[in-house]
Length: 227
Image (cartoon, rainbow, N blue to C red; front, side, top):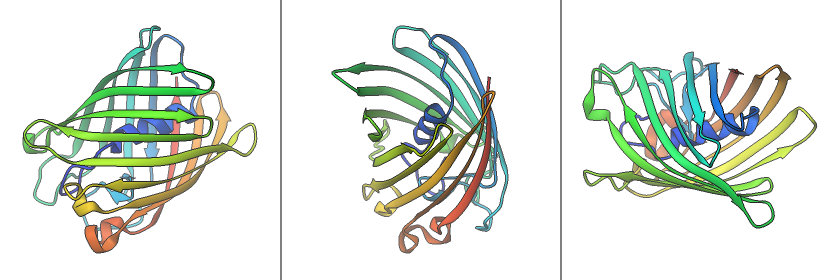
């Protein structure tokens, strides 16, 4: 999930969206597969071709929960990463620890490896941390190694409107090493169709004066199946 520079917590944000919307197994393997109208996250188009409202991408992954707080996983997406890059697939490998404390507080910390076959120059590592309470959460990610100083903080909420419908919204703040400090925002709705099937719509965008048309606010539709 990268355009011209690394965008911290992009994948992590996606994983949190999926985990918030879908039932999560207490222990063992869980799979997900999805189709999105545009690979766009944290406000920035994740397709280096000419910016447009629709450019479908196939996404999916697998997670393993050890049942003691520790987990590992993999997430993948098609796309075109970098105008001059040959990379058309993103592979993410991650692992971490999550738990709860106090009354209603939860946390998640881990590391993630981004791999772009056919263009190793895009590969990168990041660590992330998330703190949540009720409908609110704050998550932070920072680059690891090779002088990677990119960072992003996201403040968000997920408010149930009914048993099946959830409103999610948030704002993101980047440091100057990350997309020239372009801030972003999103708002969307997620609907649980049952049997592990989720449909969602989200409008997101980032400061276009810093990232160009890739930051233009767009509506992204997605269909996700968990099993």
